[in-house]
Length: 145
Image 1 (cartoon, rainbow, N blue to C red):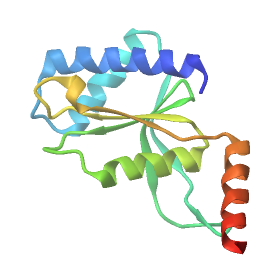
Image 2 (image 1 turned 90 degrees about the vertical axis):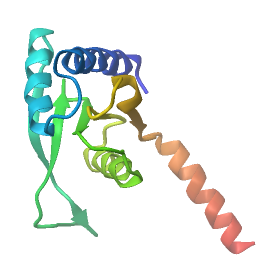
Image 3 (image 1 turned 120 degrees about the vertical axis):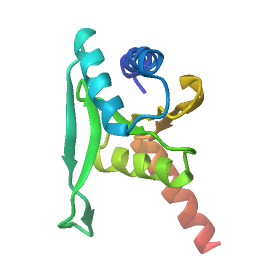
């Protein structure tokens, strides 16, 4: 993973911490998203909100609406929550979005926590094609064995 996307993630986390310090926990996700969008703009970061992603099955686009909460600088997916507890399905959702967009890093940020660092989860997708080949080859060898 390139260090620039990691630095970008650090900038977004800093912006989210500023939002959380100002607003605190307990609000709707939409309030945090609006505030984070403003904070990212203040920091000179480019972002898109509610970015549609295409789900596909065996080469066919599925007629369903999935949207990224934020796409920052075209390289970082940010999914926002304001929930009592982050569940495995929330992380799985972000991982799926990373696969569909072919991006390597996403942040899952839950603002409904007392201290924001407890609500931040980094999700990484390994896009190394050689790794995929090695895994496939390894699986094929085990199947034949």
